[in-house]
Image (cartoon, rainbow, N blue to C red):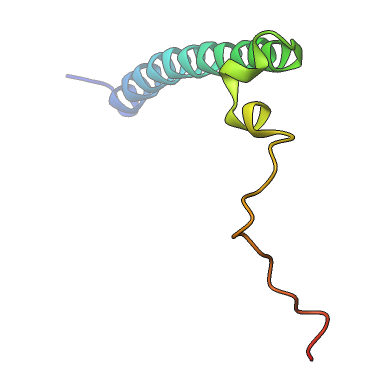
Amino acid sequence: MKQPGEEARSYEALFIKFSTQVERKLKTLLLCLLLLLIVFQILLHNRFTAPYMSAVFRLEGTPLPASFQLPNILNKE
């Protein structure tokens, strides 16, 4: 027969084991995401790879079509 509290201690041990594994996986995931962020930032700063990473670099400096007009909300004439 089990002692009082022995079952609770076994659940605690299982929970600690589970939470340690989950914590390790979350730390690994966070580290991978941080490394990816750093790599992508470096690639965005490189003028040769930036156009492949973002459409903004390809469109930068391209004039808008003549039919495109911004609404003039300052002059309400």
